[in-house]
Length: 614
Image 1: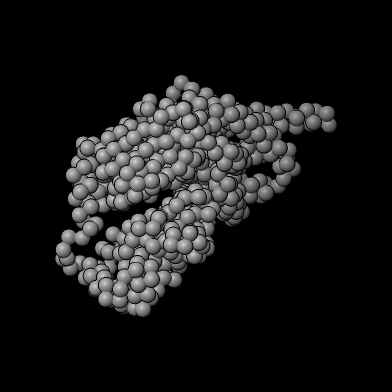
Image 2: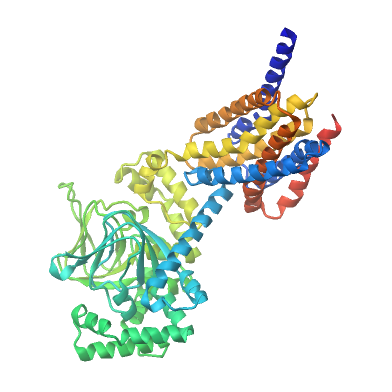
């Protein structure tokens, strides 16, 4: 009996050691990142190689051994259960931040959320009278033009007399519509699913109200230009819009909100109907403004991002700026207000005042000077107050339009990228926004990386809150990786009971798949701001948990019948095969493309070679 116990303990210890050996490549992958920062193709090669190696190990040591015993049906049942278990747990963990462990899981998570949002938006669009009977393909074309925008609490979405460029649909959060003619009294509290700016949007009039986000708010925007193009190719939509414009609701809006006479409102709607039909009209104020802005774009002072741009990008930028006249004494923005607009003086004077520093002289800006630029680019709050020193006209660019330019104008994006790398910007973050040197460097790195991947520039507010706001993400990432390793650890322990020797092909397959898994995820986790020490501890703990799992597998399945073991092998094989298909190979193809095929094949052959050595 004592000898039997010794043999049992020895098997448990061996299972533990083999589990550690198979998973020691996890911290090894993290350590590698200290002296080698692999490129995307290198990571792709290793990920595909590891996926191929694990496929071979599954085929030879799990599926093959169960088939030899004639347990196909129980194996297949286990595979299906294992696959569904992995999918369910993986989705649950990803929803809490685990998707950040890899680029491919991040992209998939975003796309999955996007599909859900698309269905939700589709239902919202159908609620708008003008769109409720459109064919599905036309609604889908309209939705493809949507822009999603995040607005922090307190953001002014638009002011009175701003041109209306978008129709707004609230995805989440709350917005107040205010009446500037009645001391900003409340007109409406808007909430999730509400649509607003409808009348100004369809009539082409400037906004007559003010919209302010009263909570952190997500909004879908329909660009007016996109709608105009769609209308010209869909006659029944053009007809519905004509009926809307000729209706009493529009007439009432033009008379009460835009202060037009009945005759003027009728002339206005006729002109808008002609415009939507694409008929040539005389040059309007908007077109004249575009021409005027193109004339001055190269002469803008105090910010170098508009110089030497190609004509095609200038043609995109110019319509997004609009010009407004302001009386002497008008306050463009106050200290500590959110920076929502970039301003350029067309003519006039603006005094920049630091109200918190009485000893500092105010700065006077004149024609073609840009102001509010640093806080605008960094997404911070203004550090000074801007007041018109005399009657002043200013060009204005709103935040959502600026972010559209970063998506559509590569030369402009490159100019912004070069500008934010300059010491002037990092000095602003340290001196004015109270960042330390490391935080300023991190913001610059993240901003450049975001622009390269088509994302918006992170705000200074986001940077300050990022650590507090995502404290649960590292745990979710750890759980996601732990989930990937559970099946293999249990199988190692169970395999030691039913086999008289250690399978080199199984150990090689697990080792080779774990290394690129850790290497790829460690790079991603470091990019999320985690320290090397924290990442290493996470991976080392997983290595020990794999060893412990192997030991428990050896204990739990010691007296299990062969059929139950085949069932467990099936669960492990199904979970791991699903993991390869959902995370490893998509990650490899996402980063390396065609290199995946040959590297997967080489990885597949490696454990088979180890099998010949047993």
